[in-house]
Length: 349
Image (cartoon, rainbow, N blue to C red; front, side, top):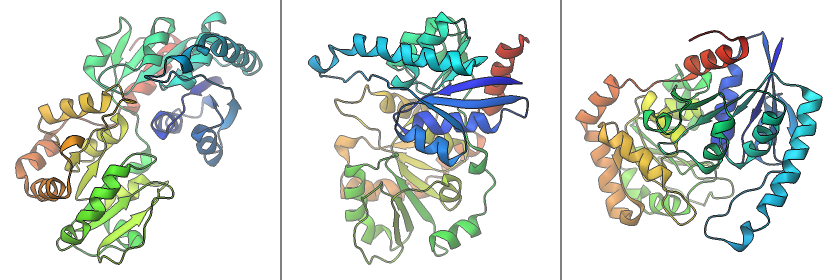
Protein backbone atom coordinates (compact mmCIF):
# COMPACT_ATOMS: atom_id res chain seq x y z
CA UNK A 1 0.00 0.00 0.00
CA UNK A 2 1.45 3.36 -1.09
CA UNK A 3 0.65 6.61 0.71
CA UNK A 4 0.35 10.07 -0.88
CA UNK A 5 0.35 13.33 1.07
CA UNK A 6 -1.73 15.97 -0.72
CA UNK A 7 -1.09 19.68 -0.12
CA UNK A 8 -2.74 22.91 -1.12
CA UNK A 9 -4.98 25.46 0.50
CA UNK A 10 -6.04 29.05 1.00
CA UNK A 11 -8.95 28.73 -1.44
CA UNK A 12 -11.28 26.04 -2.72
CA UNK A 13 -9.45 26.28 -6.07
CA UNK A 14 -6.41 24.68 -4.45
CA UNK A 15 -8.34 22.05 -2.51
CA UNK A 16 -11.21 20.72 -4.64
CA UNK A 17 -8.88 19.60 -7.49
CA UNK A 18 -6.91 17.58 -4.93
CA UNK A 19 -10.14 15.92 -3.84
CA UNK A 20 -10.82 15.09 -7.50
CA UNK A 21 -7.44 13.34 -7.76
CA UNK A 22 -7.96 11.49 -4.47
CA UNK A 23 -11.32 10.17 -5.74
CA UNK A 24 -9.52 8.54 -8.68
CA UNK A 25 -6.50 7.00 -6.94
CA UNK A 26 -7.80 3.46 -6.65
CA UNK A 27 -7.69 1.02 -3.76
CA UNK A 28 -3.92 0.51 -3.68
CA UNK A 29 -3.11 4.06 -2.61
CA UNK A 30 -3.89 5.72 0.71
CA UNK A 31 -4.39 9.50 0.72
CA UNK A 32 -3.85 12.02 3.49
CA UNK A 33 -3.61 15.80 3.50
CA UNK A 34 -1.39 18.54 4.95
CA UNK A 35 -2.65 22.11 5.07
CA UNK A 36 -3.51 25.10 7.19
CA UNK A 37 -6.41 25.69 9.54
CA UNK A 38 -8.43 27.00 6.60
CA UNK A 39 -10.87 25.82 3.99
CA UNK A 40 -8.77 22.73 3.25
CA UNK A 41 -9.30 21.47 6.81
CA UNK A 42 -13.08 21.78 6.52
CA UNK A 43 -13.22 20.15 3.08
CA UNK A 44 -11.00 17.24 4.16
CA UNK A 45 -13.14 16.66 7.24
CA UNK A 46 -16.32 16.55 5.15
CA UNK A 47 -14.65 14.03 2.80
CA UNK A 48 -13.22 11.83 5.59
CA UNK A 49 -9.61 12.49 4.59
CA UNK A 50 -6.93 12.25 7.29
CA UNK A 51 -5.65 15.79 7.86
CA UNK A 52 -2.42 17.19 9.33
CA UNK A 53 -2.21 20.88 10.19
CA UNK A 54 0.81 23.03 9.37
CA UNK A 55 1.09 26.82 9.33
CA UNK A 56 2.09 28.42 6.06
CA UNK A 57 3.29 31.88 5.13
CA UNK A 58 1.80 33.92 2.34
CA UNK A 59 3.46 36.58 0.19
CA UNK A 60 1.29 39.71 0.24
CA UNK A 61 1.47 41.61 -3.05
CA UNK A 62 2.19 45.33 -2.70
CA UNK A 63 2.94 45.09 1.06
CA UNK A 64 6.74 45.14 1.40
CA UNK A 65 6.92 45.44 5.19
CA UNK A 66 4.44 42.62 5.76
CA UNK A 67 6.77 40.30 3.84
CA UNK A 68 10.00 41.03 5.76
CA UNK A 69 9.46 38.24 8.29
CA UNK A 70 8.51 35.61 5.71
CA UNK A 71 11.87 33.76 5.59
CA UNK A 72 11.85 33.19 9.37
CA UNK A 73 8.22 32.05 9.40
CA UNK A 74 8.90 29.74 6.46
CA UNK A 75 11.79 28.05 8.25
CA UNK A 76 9.51 27.34 11.22
CA UNK A 77 6.77 25.98 8.94
CA UNK A 78 9.22 23.72 7.10
CA UNK A 79 10.34 22.21 10.42
CA UNK A 80 6.73 21.53 11.39
CA UNK A 81 6.02 19.97 8.00
CA UNK A 82 9.15 17.84 8.31
CA UNK A 83 8.01 16.41 11.64
CA UNK A 84 4.67 15.47 10.09
CA UNK A 85 6.40 13.79 7.15
CA UNK A 86 8.65 11.85 9.53
CA UNK A 87 5.58 10.54 11.34
CA UNK A 88 3.43 9.79 8.27
CA UNK A 89 6.22 8.61 5.94
CA UNK A 90 4.40 9.23 2.63
CA UNK A 91 5.74 7.78 -0.62
CA UNK A 92 4.85 10.89 -2.62
CA UNK A 93 3.81 14.52 -2.09
CA UNK A 94 1.21 15.95 -4.48
CA UNK A 95 0.93 19.74 -4.43
CA UNK A 96 -1.83 21.85 -5.96
CA UNK A 97 -0.14 25.25 -5.79
CA UNK A 98 -0.64 28.06 -3.33
CA UNK A 99 1.39 29.05 -0.29
CA UNK A 100 0.25 25.98 1.73
CA UNK A 101 2.39 23.78 -0.55
CA UNK A 102 5.69 25.44 0.26
CA UNK A 103 6.53 23.89 3.68
CA UNK A 104 5.75 20.25 2.77
CA UNK A 105 7.46 20.51 -0.64
CA UNK A 106 10.64 21.92 0.89
CA UNK A 107 10.60 19.43 3.76
CA UNK A 108 10.03 16.53 1.36
CA UNK A 109 13.13 17.38 -0.66
CA UNK A 110 15.34 17.01 2.40
CA UNK A 111 13.86 13.54 3.00
CA UNK A 112 14.12 12.36 -0.62
CA UNK A 113 10.35 12.08 -0.91
CA UNK A 114 9.34 12.68 -4.55
CA UNK A 115 7.10 15.70 -5.19
CA UNK A 116 4.64 16.33 -8.00
CA UNK A 117 2.92 19.68 -8.31
CA UNK A 118 0.05 20.85 -10.50
CA UNK A 119 -0.26 24.38 -11.92
CA UNK A 120 -3.77 25.46 -12.92
CA UNK A 121 -3.18 28.76 -14.71
CA UNK A 122 -1.73 29.86 -18.05
CA UNK A 123 1.21 31.43 -16.20
CA UNK A 124 2.71 29.72 -13.17
CA UNK A 125 2.05 31.01 -9.67
CA UNK A 126 4.84 32.04 -7.30
CA UNK A 127 4.67 28.93 -5.09
CA UNK A 128 4.99 26.55 -8.03
CA UNK A 129 7.85 28.58 -9.49
CA UNK A 130 9.72 28.29 -6.19
CA UNK A 131 9.24 24.54 -5.73
CA UNK A 132 9.42 23.44 -9.38
CA UNK A 133 13.08 22.45 -9.34
CA UNK A 134 12.44 20.28 -6.30
CA UNK A 135 9.66 18.41 -8.10
CA UNK A 136 9.86 15.27 -10.21
CA UNK A 137 7.11 16.66 -12.44
CA UNK A 138 5.20 19.90 -12.84
CA UNK A 139 1.79 19.02 -14.24
CA UNK A 140 -0.22 21.81 -15.85
CA UNK A 141 -3.68 22.62 -17.15
CA UNK A 142 -2.39 24.75 -20.05
CA UNK A 143 0.29 23.83 -22.62
CA UNK A 144 2.01 27.22 -22.26
CA UNK A 145 2.51 26.69 -18.52
CA UNK A 146 4.18 23.31 -19.13
CA UNK A 147 6.70 25.02 -21.41
CA UNK A 148 7.84 27.22 -18.50
CA UNK A 149 9.39 24.20 -16.77
CA UNK A 150 12.02 21.70 -17.85
CA UNK A 151 9.93 19.01 -16.11
CA UNK A 152 6.55 20.39 -17.23
CA UNK A 153 3.82 18.08 -18.56
CA UNK A 154 0.40 19.30 -19.72
CA UNK A 155 -2.21 16.92 -18.29
CA UNK A 156 -5.31 19.07 -18.09
CA UNK A 157 -7.30 19.95 -14.99
CA UNK A 158 -8.50 17.49 -12.33
CA UNK A 159 -12.29 17.49 -11.99
CA UNK A 160 -14.63 15.74 -9.57
CA UNK A 161 -16.66 12.79 -10.85
CA UNK A 162 -19.96 14.31 -9.69
CA UNK A 163 -19.70 17.17 -12.21
CA UNK A 164 -20.62 14.91 -15.11
CA UNK A 165 -23.75 13.15 -16.36
CA UNK A 166 -26.14 14.87 -13.97
CA UNK A 167 -29.87 15.21 -14.49
CA UNK A 168 -31.13 18.58 -15.74
CA UNK A 169 -34.64 17.71 -14.57
CA UNK A 170 -33.37 16.88 -11.08
CA UNK A 171 -31.31 20.09 -10.98
CA UNK A 172 -34.27 22.29 -11.97
CA UNK A 173 -36.47 20.68 -9.34
CA UNK A 174 -33.80 21.02 -6.64
CA UNK A 175 -33.21 24.72 -7.30
CA UNK A 176 -36.93 25.41 -7.95
CA UNK A 177 -36.47 26.68 -11.50
CA UNK A 178 -39.03 26.70 -14.31
CA UNK A 179 -38.54 25.44 -17.88
CA UNK A 180 -36.95 28.64 -19.24
CA UNK A 181 -33.19 28.70 -19.96
CA UNK A 182 -31.13 29.15 -16.80
CA UNK A 183 -28.17 31.50 -16.31
CA UNK A 184 -25.70 30.35 -13.67
CA UNK A 185 -23.83 33.23 -12.00
CA UNK A 186 -20.82 32.64 -9.77
CA UNK A 187 -18.04 34.90 -8.52
CA UNK A 188 -15.72 32.29 -7.08
CA UNK A 189 -15.61 30.60 -3.69
CA UNK A 190 -16.26 33.75 -1.68
CA UNK A 191 -18.44 35.49 -4.23
CA UNK A 192 -17.68 38.73 -6.04
CA UNK A 193 -19.07 42.01 -4.74
CA UNK A 194 -19.08 43.70 -8.15
CA UNK A 195 -20.68 40.74 -9.94
CA UNK A 196 -23.26 40.32 -7.16
CA UNK A 197 -24.17 44.00 -7.32
CA UNK A 198 -24.42 44.12 -11.13
CA UNK A 199 -26.41 40.92 -11.60
CA UNK A 200 -28.94 42.09 -9.03
CA UNK A 201 -29.38 45.39 -10.84
CA UNK A 202 -29.89 43.41 -14.05
CA UNK A 203 -32.03 40.57 -12.67
CA UNK A 204 -35.48 42.08 -13.21
CA UNK A 205 -34.82 42.56 -16.94
CA UNK A 206 -32.98 39.27 -17.47
CA UNK A 207 -35.62 37.26 -15.61
CA UNK A 208 -38.20 38.23 -18.20
CA UNK A 209 -36.55 35.58 -20.40
CA UNK A 210 -34.28 33.51 -18.15
CA UNK A 211 -33.98 31.92 -14.73
CA UNK A 212 -30.94 33.07 -12.76
CA UNK A 213 -29.20 30.75 -10.31
CA UNK A 214 -26.85 33.07 -8.42
CA UNK A 215 -24.15 31.57 -6.17
CA UNK A 216 -23.26 34.75 -4.30
CA UNK A 217 -20.93 33.69 -1.47
CA UNK A 218 -21.36 33.22 2.26
CA UNK A 219 -23.34 36.00 3.92
CA UNK A 220 -24.09 37.74 0.62
CA UNK A 221 -27.77 36.93 0.02
CA UNK A 222 -30.26 39.82 -0.04
CA UNK A 223 -34.06 40.10 0.19
CA UNK A 224 -35.70 39.98 -3.23
CA UNK A 225 -39.00 38.99 -4.85
CA UNK A 226 -37.92 38.84 -8.51
CA UNK A 227 -39.57 35.84 -10.15
CA UNK A 228 -36.98 33.47 -11.60
CA UNK A 229 -34.08 34.87 -9.55
CA UNK A 230 -32.73 32.21 -7.18
CA UNK A 231 -29.76 32.96 -4.91
CA UNK A 232 -27.72 30.63 -2.71
CA UNK A 233 -24.59 31.34 -0.68
CA UNK A 234 -22.70 28.29 -1.92
CA UNK A 235 -23.20 24.65 -2.84
CA UNK A 236 -21.16 21.54 -2.13
CA UNK A 237 -22.59 20.01 -5.32
CA UNK A 238 -21.48 22.14 -8.25
CA UNK A 239 -22.39 19.29 -10.57
CA UNK A 240 -26.06 19.90 -9.85
CA UNK A 241 -25.65 23.66 -10.39
CA UNK A 242 -23.88 23.08 -13.71
CA UNK A 243 -26.57 20.60 -14.77
CA UNK A 244 -29.30 23.24 -14.83
CA UNK A 245 -27.11 25.89 -16.55
CA UNK A 246 -27.77 26.78 -20.19
CA UNK A 247 -25.29 29.65 -19.90
CA UNK A 248 -23.06 31.16 -17.23
CA UNK A 249 -21.49 34.37 -15.96
CA UNK A 250 -18.35 33.63 -14.00
CA UNK A 251 -14.93 34.71 -12.83
CA UNK A 252 -12.17 32.97 -14.78
CA UNK A 253 -10.27 30.95 -12.23
CA UNK A 254 -8.71 28.04 -14.07
CA UNK A 255 -10.63 25.22 -12.41
CA UNK A 256 -14.04 26.78 -12.92
CA UNK A 257 -13.18 27.85 -16.47
CA UNK A 258 -12.05 24.36 -17.46
CA UNK A 259 -15.16 22.82 -15.89
CA UNK A 260 -17.51 25.16 -17.74
CA UNK A 261 -15.77 24.57 -21.08
CA UNK A 262 -15.52 20.80 -20.54
CA UNK A 263 -19.25 20.72 -19.75
CA UNK A 264 -19.97 22.74 -22.93
CA UNK A 265 -21.70 25.58 -21.04
CA UNK A 266 -21.55 28.92 -22.95
CA UNK A 267 -19.93 31.37 -20.54
CA UNK A 268 -19.36 35.09 -20.22
CA UNK A 269 -16.18 35.38 -18.17
CA UNK A 270 -15.51 38.47 -16.06
CA UNK A 271 -11.86 37.95 -15.00
CA UNK A 272 -10.66 39.25 -11.65
CA UNK A 273 -8.28 42.16 -12.10
CA UNK A 274 -6.98 44.19 -9.18
CA UNK A 275 -3.74 44.92 -7.36
CA UNK A 276 -4.01 41.71 -5.33
CA UNK A 277 -4.18 39.60 -8.49
CA UNK A 278 -1.21 38.65 -10.69
CA UNK A 279 -3.47 38.79 -13.75
CA UNK A 280 -3.84 35.04 -14.10
CA UNK A 281 -7.60 35.16 -14.70
CA UNK A 282 -7.15 37.58 -17.60
CA UNK A 283 -4.61 35.25 -19.21
CA UNK A 284 -6.92 32.27 -18.65
CA UNK A 285 -9.76 34.14 -20.36
CA UNK A 286 -7.54 35.17 -23.26
CA UNK A 287 -6.64 31.52 -23.85
CA UNK A 288 -10.26 30.40 -24.14
CA UNK A 289 -11.57 33.39 -26.08
CA UNK A 290 -8.78 33.02 -28.66
CA UNK A 291 -10.17 29.56 -29.38
CA UNK A 292 -13.74 30.76 -29.63
CA UNK A 293 -14.78 28.90 -26.47
CA UNK A 294 -16.18 31.76 -24.39
CA UNK A 295 -17.03 35.44 -24.28
CA UNK A 296 -15.24 37.96 -22.07
CA UNK A 297 -16.38 41.15 -20.37
CA UNK A 298 -13.62 43.11 -18.65
CA UNK A 299 -14.38 44.23 -15.11
CA UNK A 300 -13.70 47.89 -15.94
CA UNK A 301 -16.46 47.69 -18.58
CA UNK A 302 -18.97 45.90 -16.37
CA UNK A 303 -22.30 47.68 -15.90
CA UNK A 304 -25.98 46.79 -15.90
CA UNK A 305 -26.17 47.67 -19.60
CA UNK A 306 -23.09 45.70 -20.70
CA UNK A 307 -23.99 42.69 -18.59
CA UNK A 308 -27.52 42.44 -19.96
CA UNK A 309 -26.27 42.84 -23.52
CA UNK A 310 -23.56 40.27 -22.91
CA UNK A 311 -25.99 37.68 -21.55
CA UNK A 312 -28.40 38.01 -24.48
CA UNK A 313 -25.48 37.73 -26.92
CA UNK A 314 -24.24 34.67 -25.05
CA UNK A 315 -27.50 32.76 -25.37
CA UNK A 316 -27.89 33.60 -29.07
CA UNK A 317 -24.29 32.83 -30.15
CA UNK A 318 -24.59 29.65 -32.22
CA UNK A 319 -20.95 29.85 -33.32
CA UNK A 320 -19.84 29.68 -29.68
CA UNK A 321 -22.08 26.67 -29.03
CA UNK A 322 -20.65 24.89 -32.07
CA UNK A 323 -17.07 25.57 -30.94
CA UNK A 324 -17.83 24.25 -27.45
CA UNK A 325 -19.41 21.10 -28.87
CA UNK A 326 -16.22 20.40 -30.82
CA UNK A 327 -13.82 21.40 -28.04
CA UNK A 328 -11.17 18.92 -26.90
CA UNK A 329 -10.98 20.43 -23.39
CA UNK A 330 -11.79 17.62 -20.98
CA UNK A 331 -11.18 16.26 -17.50
CA UNK A 332 -7.47 15.64 -16.81
CA UNK A 333 -7.88 12.99 -14.10
CA UNK A 334 -6.75 10.02 -16.19
CA UNK A 335 -3.49 11.64 -17.32
CA UNK A 336 -2.73 12.97 -13.82
CA UNK A 337 -3.23 9.53 -12.25
CA UNK A 338 -0.97 8.06 -14.92
CA UNK A 339 1.82 10.49 -14.00
CA UNK A 340 1.35 9.73 -10.28
CA UNK A 341 1.57 5.98 -10.85
CA UNK A 342 4.59 6.46 -13.08
CA UNK A 343 6.40 8.28 -10.28
CA UNK A 344 5.33 5.88 -7.53
CA UNK A 345 6.10 2.67 -9.38
CA UNK A 346 8.76 3.80 -11.87
CA UNK A 347 6.67 2.96 -14.92
CA UNK A 348 7.18 4.78 -18.20
CA UNK A 349 4.25 6.76 -19.66
